Amino acid sequence: MKSLMLAAVSTAWAAPAAGNPGSGIIHMVFGAGTVVKLVLIILVLLSIACWAIIFLKHRLFRRVSKESSRFLNLFWNSKSLVTVFREAKKMEESPLAEIFRVGYMELGRLSKSSDREKANNPNDLEVQMVWVDNMERALRSAVNGEMQRLEKALPLLATTGNAAPFIGLFGTVWGIMVAFQGIGLKGSATLAVVAPGISEALIATAAGLAAAIPAVVAYNHFTNKVRNQETEMINFSNDFLNIVRRDIVRRTGRMVHGEQPSTDSMQPAADSAPVED
Figure 1 (cartoon, rainbow, N blue to C red):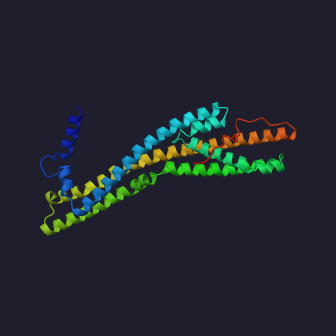
Figure 2: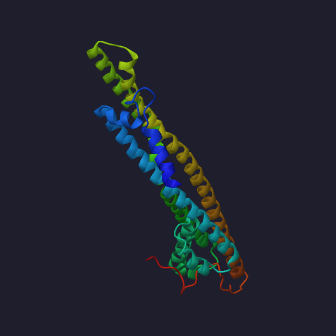
Figure 3: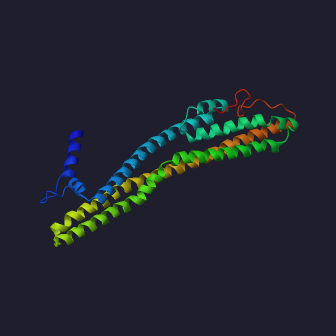
């Protein structure tokens, strides 16, 4: 069945129009001038690149959605950030997992570097809130990095959508110029003389539209997905920072009242603080 369908499509494209054996689409492509052929090659290459990007981005966003859902479920149901960090390292495609890894590692570094400051003034809330500021910058940087990763190669879709019709139009205009030159040399302007050259030139415009339309639709689709992911990343960053703030305030309140703070599951332990590879 599949072979029959392919054969039918090939026959339809190659079949000449009634009464004119030389007017088949494939014949027109091979009969076009050098400049028109060059334009068609450029458009075919752009179309192939765009379809490759569409396929890869579709697979990427499907994995991103799946792993991000798994990570959020793990994050909100786990009582230990150490466990979340360990599992998050396995979710390489999830932007939320990457943001959490960056924030957790920054929290571990700050916990080690500020031990002396807390020893000199253990009740200083301002010192501990500096952690939050540093974490906020680290999380913001992680969000920007993930946005760049998700948007990678999308500009080619936008460029193809904007430029392909004009590239095809250039080929058409050039082909029509050549066709009119041929008319002048033959000294005849009948439809039989004019139609073949103009039809060959119009193939370039059709190819430009065929490359541009899928590129524009795909660019808008994936741009919307990137914006949704950006919203999720910002919301998760804010939630993570709020958890850290509440934990710091609670610990400081206990120390002010002379209580010994218990080891909190939301604080990286000294022996399990992450170390960058």
